[in-house]
Image (tube, rainbow, N blue to C red):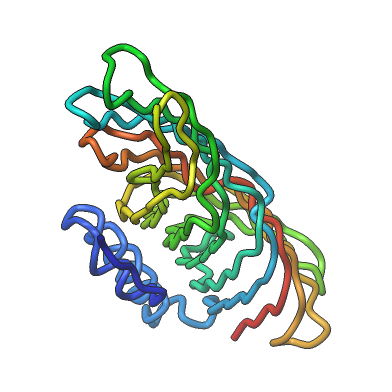
Length: 263
C-alpha cells in the first residue's frame, strides 16, 4: 500500500526527474522574467484560489484471477468515479506581450462503491463455479495535480481580466481496488453467498495536459473575484491484485470560482 500527500511541493518532489525539471524550469523562468530591470514595471504577479467541481465522471473495470479449492476462480470489479468537489490554487507572473506563466495545484477527493461479480469454484467438483455478487463500499479516489501553464491575456478593458492557458499536468492518483471476495457456503456447497470484499490502494503518477480559461472581475486594483474552466487529462496503469494492469484516466472538466489577487 502506498501513501500520498496533499502538499503540492511534495507532489513535485515525488515526480520523476525529467518532469520535476520541467516544473522547476517554469518557476525559474517566471522569476527571472519578473526580476528583469528593463521590464519589471510591466510584470504583475497573480494568484487565484478556487472551489468548484470536477464535473466529469469516469468508469473502469478490473478482472482478478485467484485460486480456491485447487481451481481457478475470478471476479470482475466495476468502478464508477462520480463528479465531486475540487480545491484549486494557482499563481504566476504576467510577462510582456500579454503572455504569462503560471503554476496551479488542484485536489479531487471522492469515495465510490464498486460492484463485484465473482465465480467461486466448487469444493468437490471441477468446472462447477458458483456465481456471487455484491459491492465494495467507500473506495478511495484521490487526485493531486500540478498544472504548468503558459497564458495569453486577452486584451480586455478594466475591470475585466481574461486569460487562456495550456501546458503539461503532473498527476498523482490514489485509487482503492478490490483485492479479494469473501463468501459463505453450506453443505452440499452448490450455492455460495457474497459476504464482503477486501480492498487496498494503489498510487501512481502520470503526465498529461491541461487547457482552459480564467476570467476575473477586479473591484479594486489588487482584489477581485473570478471563474475558472479547465480540462485536464492523464492516463496511467494501476497494478491489480493478480499483477495485471488496470488502465485509469485522471482529471476531467473543472469548473469553479473564487478569489483573484494581483500585485
